[in-house]
Image (cartoon, rainbow, N blue to C red; front, side):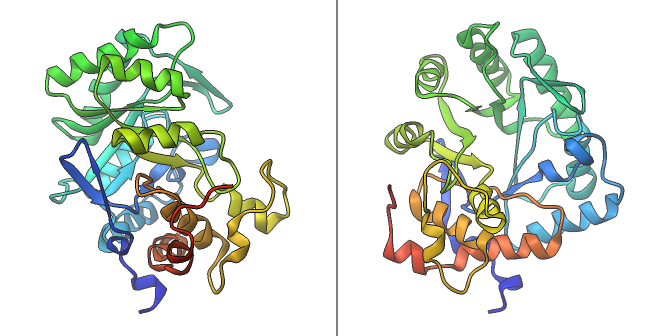
Length: 290
């Protein structure tokens, strides 16, 4: 099968909270924004075509955030895909402000999270967000207060499941004392593994681990930029692109991992999704560790 026809379903599935099952090859929509993740893409029609192509290939998990654009990323998803097909999960995040293209400021005050969630509902044209994630803990706000507000929004029917992002193991455990956490979205790839203990905890707890910057190691491998953990298994892959090898490594690393590679290019989207069919590394190294 040509790589541009390989479906996301080839990667298998992962389930949030024992109820919400998606293909284990998602799409991160952040790149469907202007430079510095600020403003809109010049060609909105191209972005619409890419999102529709992702669905054609079986992607049924799309990740976004209110801070991407800001706000424009959620709007473009709704413009391209609403009314949404059955089974499509759109996950979004709140807790960051964007006062300028260069600044990302944490704001996880309960009042801000409530307003952010309700605004995301309007932009995405949803009555309930399947997965709402705290984008990052705010050092000025007790984590329990931030997560507690998400629990209140959940009890009101505005959120189905709660996730957290950019957390360490202690923060994850604290969040779990307040809410049922079904996902963690942290930076992780074959060259950056600072969150191994978080991933291990997710495996034990049945939490889906969503790595951001999933092809970072591949980008460095092709540019010659060194990573902090030395040689990676990417060099063992044959007849794949660097991006495909990076994604395949994540799929092999843990069944809890849901990769969400992002791009604004349809050919690159197809290339990334085709990594779902790269079996060599997954069969030879079912649980790769350094």
